Amino acid sequence: MSLGTRKTKTEGSGNVLRRRRTILAWGFALPFVVVFCVFMLIPLLSSMAMSFTDITSKDLRTPFNVNFVGLDQYIALFHDRRFLHALGVTGIFVLVGLPITMVIALAFAVALNKGSKHLNAFFRAVFYAPVVASVVAVSVVWRYILQKDGLLNSLLAVFGIAGPDWLHDTRYALPALMAMTIWRNMGTLMIIFLAGLQAIPEELKEAAAIDGASRWQILRKVVLPISWPTISVLFVFFFVWTWNEYMIPMAFLMSDDVQTIPLALATLQGQRTMEATTLASASLLSIIPTIIFFIIFQRKLSQGITAGAVK
Image (cartoon, rainbow, N blue to C red; front, side):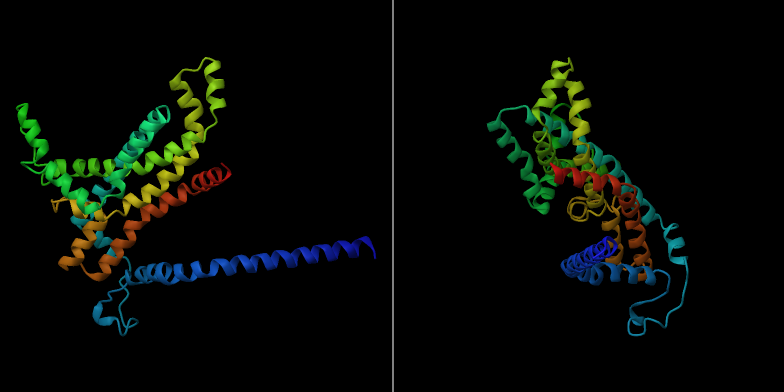
């Protein structure tokens, strides 16, 4: 048998093996692909198609007997004050609240990483308790604290300060919502940050200390660069989750003038003050920022997950 014939047979068997592995991989992935297409992709594409027509509930039996309206629904949205206001509220809620949450969680994780093991276990349980608590129960407690004659204003009155109406005043409702969300979500981020910090070899920090690095320099030059994959993954996941958060604003907010996009869309649908096709257009527009953000940070996300798996 010649060398060329042997090489051809080897390449052929290798191709067959790769083909079998590909078929096996798709076989394992098929249940997820089916569920994703049926419950995610098809409804999303259907909503996209509906947003370019004047379809109504009466047209469900004859969905193809509708008129094509182009971008009229989207143009109407950008002239809708309620949608634009909800978009701005959601942007501030996410782009301001999430970085603050991550900074506070990282600071507590660094502090706990240097403390006593027994105290660490206690504080981890304390900080994580709001995460496992019911959203409604947490919202009721915070509303009791922040209402006009609530605990916070009563405490301020002791010092002669007249507290505002935290829940109904549009100037304070969003900061109050952000404060509660930061308090509730900080525990999850802190636990994950703490796990990442504990995975950093002590030899690296000791070597930096021997070279004369201060604690701040060790944190900035050693700890943060190594923890960057973890930070990137958490930022992407929590950005998407916070942008689509519905339960916390629904249970906490008392002012109709301060609503996030998911809450505003649910309210408009319940009041029937917006057409179904316009709501479909608004839903699509509301997820565009998360899609763009995910595409931009996709490489960072992949690197973070790969680095976490390697650790």
